[in-house]
Image (tube, rainbow, N blue to C red; front, side, top):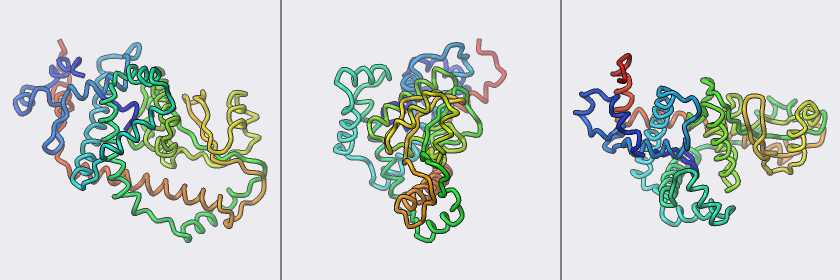
Length: 348
């Protein structure tokens, strides 16, 4: 989900999409139904509105097939969100107005009214659109907190076992920087499995996506959660973007811009958007450590281990929970059916 930037869509491309639907599908459902989740519909108008919000302008050189791939993936996200929202509603976990207003005001806080209105305009959203998305996001977050996070327990034995198995990694031969990152790439990697299955497909999309993530970070959203949901680095996404400890000397071999950015940040601070070999990224300095062995008695070591183990279990449980929820739901994806039914047919 994307609190500020959430992927939403308008009826503008509906006519083209409906041409892809076979007659049988049109007879069995309303012509404006892209998917059915249990007894609720996701319309082509919703899909198009979400699409316009996420992809504010067609990427140069995009083909009709590429656009449809984006819409199929976006519809999958909308279906997943609807499944989770229905679960939250059934369990009485829907966000109340006070929750929504508090989050809305939190997002507005870093901007002037003109800047905030411009952000909404650029995303083709209204304030009511944003509040509706926030209500969905907060409700699903409450569901995850109840069903997943509240059941995760990291014991002292877990911490001790992790430390003993990785003791050498806490022995710093030189000053090191504990970093986390969120990476966005211009080409989708099939090995990337973030929670939202969200991947940029070209440089323009990558730039829009990283800017949206940066805005959410500035609004105070959790770095690790955004990394799990949206980062496109297959090696760090599951751990909330955690890169571990990086020797300070390693930055002598990087670009001066990166070295200045990292060494100039204080623990807890976040970098601006930076170029990377595989795309673009945002870094967070978790801590800066002098050389020497870090013992298990060090509270910072224990906290680091607990956060690492918590992120791992949280990622695993959420992935499994999504699968169970999909299995329990009755979903009909009319858009996907229509595309498959019309495979090989002329679009004339």
